[in-house]
Length: 276
Image (cartoon, rainbow, N blue to C red; front, side, top):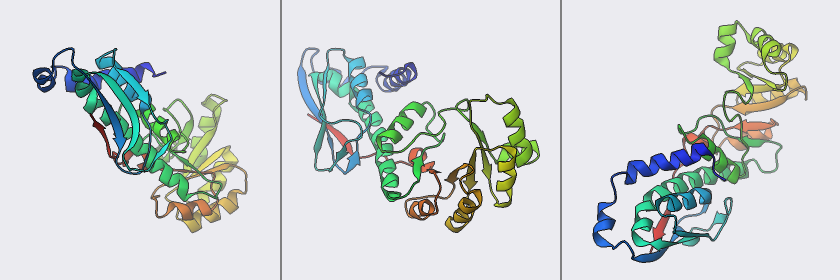
């Protein structure tokens, strides 16, 4: 079931595209004419967003019939695989087309990119995680797409976990001070994670009570040194400067998770189209 925030996003998307009507479809087709159409995948991709697509068509015309032929997380070959079929009033199908595809192409793009990163760390202990670098208003959908691609979600929002970043450390006067303040004041059920930029900060963070160490902008050899130094005393996350060419080397160094902002801020919309 879609959340109220996602329903509101769908309403906003339709309002900006259809708020003043669809003069082309209304001029060509009568109110009772009906058609069927299918959405096809024209490149290899991982599908995500089918429930949103169904909701878009339903919001334009409740009598539109939607039939998914695959599920979120399924992999398409790109040889015109049929993703779903819609049937209903011709005007409604055409008016909903672009908005439905915008959601499906972006979400499937995020899922597809995530799947590539996940495949690149196969055989290691590392899990690929997202970040909060999502499109404004799209947080829930971007994170859903990451899961469809086999990735894991990091914090959903600023209340979901304590993550002490470099600016927190600078404003607090150091790693130790920041971690100790968080340990004393944050909800006890939340783990304390702290970002470090140098090996020398790791012991300070551990002694102060950090439970997760975020190694920011470390190269793979430096990550291996940090993993050896931490020696199981905390979970280890790596971030910064990680792409498909480098993530394998980072994963081989032994961290528990690797966070990749590119999953949501740089994913390309994949090639899907609606065909009558």
